[in-house]
Image (cartoon, rainbow, N blue to C red):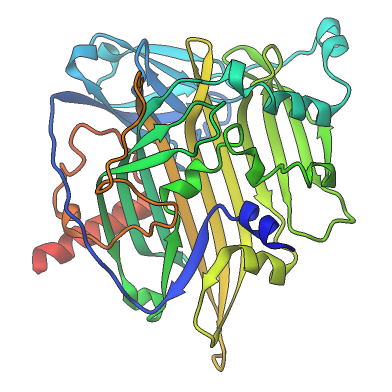
Length: 422
């Protein structure tokens, strides 16, 4: 594997360091808003629906459900009489008035029935690879092609086995460049907090180099080179899967995986493409980590000599959202799992690293972005250690965040108790 392939395969670099840490200042801001809290479930199976979009109609304010199917949406009081639009891939869209939502609400979605009529079957492309290439070439027409300032919530966690060892959260401003622009996006830090329980890391600190940039680079339309480079697009096999729906629109499903003769770790998964416009609406994929040595080279930047590390899992998800006929980056999730062997020790350790970022608001920026050097993050950023924010239940103020899952809620509760003692 050459250096170019290594670069393009690296969404998130893991660094295994001796314990270290820094801190930064946190801004505060509050405003008037009301909270809508609840769950989204499937009508038939009663299963909770993960990664469901909830958007305040006629605005760009939004959130997504967590892995427990739960959400918390902060609605500015000026939109208290508005409507929330709930949508999920493969389900019928639902609209609910905000004024009718009292207490903890339970939103139920109906599965969308997908039927391919004769016209659709005839018009569907025969070549799945050609469809993917055409989709990637349409970014200038189908995606937001203006300077866009996005507000987003970012969370990254590290678990040793099933116990939380590190938790970082941040609100950021994404300076999103036009999709036809070759300039990379920038990220401005608004506020953040982090806590690490080093006793659970066996004096070994795992740090995610890249932070929010890792999730931003899953935007396949803006950064196709991180998966489908011109050099390796022919190393994949593409095929059609069973079609589905999103908001009553037919969605083609394209499966992809690397050619069996290719030994370099590539990706496999599903691309969801709007049948009418050929826009990429969602993607769910994983890196092939069967080759331990090569896949380790992709992720592990630094580690102690006495430690062997290899990835067990590398899963990715990217969701787009449409507004005024243009699609834009909305949500991404990265899940990595590593096995760590200390030389001379009988037992090994398993670490799981998860990061997710959700765009919660955005606006078109008419002028060019001005870089604020003191507030801009770098693609090599490692979020600094800062625990003080956990003591304040109102830390995030008016900013929308991804509702923490049960294990993270418990971790935050423990951190607050520890801070009270100290």
